[in-house]
Length: 229
Image (cartoon, rainbow, N blue to C red; front, side, top):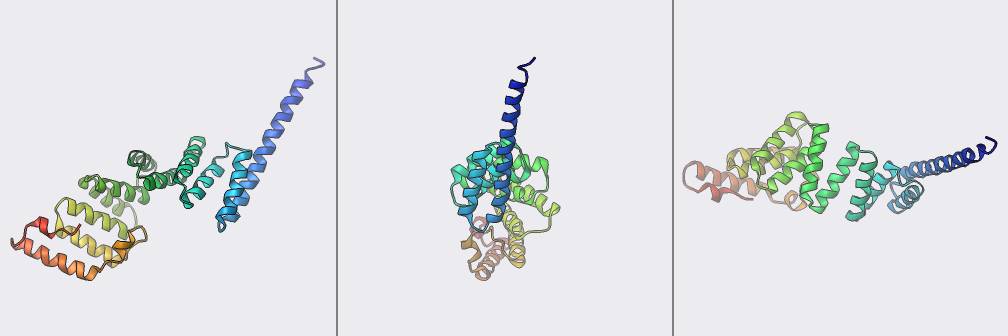
């Protein structure tokens, strides 16, 4: 018994070292929140934090966010996936979805978005991205369902009317698609819409589309000739 204190003291010292490293990592992570305006400084601080404590999920996630902003998608993915394994959060899932979206990794993106919607059924970002992917896959009915679901559960957003218009065009419901596009234009275009689209001559576009649809409705034009996308 007289030597029992030696292994116990070794364990106590080891625990103290681990606690000190974790505390130091936490302090570095907290400091990084003040460095958001300076991405290079923030990244340096976060790298020191994860070096001290690789199991700090928040620091790993924010380092992934920093790399995403810098355009380094591979490290952003690696860091965010690690953060999600350490502690899954809705914010982490959204960040991971952004990485998969940028990488066009549709399989993982769809799985991540469905997981987000299982946790928060009305999440507008998840619904928008999933509708966007479904349109790309020509699953127009599913895209319409997702867009309508988003509009029913959230404040109307112009981006959803844009996607709904795309889905309706895919379903050959051209007049409804045109009305959705008008709503999109009246509400103002969100920043997520492509710059080329935002800078288009929409007044001329809508006049032309309406004229074509009128000809379709009068039986003077094939419906497929009235599409613009």
